[in-house]
Length: 268
Figure 1 (cartoon, helix red, strand yellow):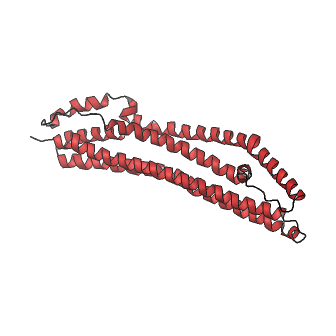
Figure 2 (cartoon, rainbow, N blue to C red; figure 1 turned 45 degrees about the vertical axis):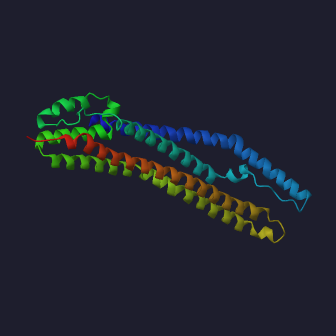
Figure 3 (spheres, rainbow, N blue to C red; figure 1 turned 90 degrees about the vertical axis):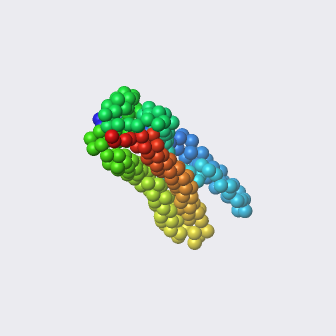
């Protein structure tokens, strides 16, 4: 059990350092590239409008991304993708154990309660990285339950209980990612409110013919919402793919337990 608990601090440290590195990297790109180029594009567009009243400004990706709301949404999205990648790698590692015969029971042979120590030693000799995975833990619990109760039905219930507990744990660990997936559109709506507020603050200048302040505020409002919703669509897709992979892992582990262990158990 101690080896299983060691996974949580590692994931916490990974999440913390990933967020710090992503935040620094994204902010550096914004300071050195995005905002300077956005200011240059806006200055060129203002100069062109002064020369030609019929000039139609082209949409620039730097202008769309320049505000603080877009930067915050991108930082959260990249951090969430990094965490999803970490969890997806863990799931892939656990799925590889399903391809191995962890309990060596030839077809036609039976496992008796007196044989559990021999099979348990094989599982206990696994490397710590493999021993903390779902399948070896469920196999050990099933073997020990069979040795204690000598009842195959109890073994089946114990194995199912381990798998259900793992499914609940995996689902609870996705709560922060679900919150981020909700928070990104909320950040976009904050930019919308801020942009509309800035536009209303410049409305008195529109009476005199200067609509630049109003258009800038509305641009902030629409751009922040656009980026936030696009990011949210991609993030929710990745999150659902991760959840699907984890659910399949738990179901396939239950099938493995039935086919490779429980059906071979017999009481004299």
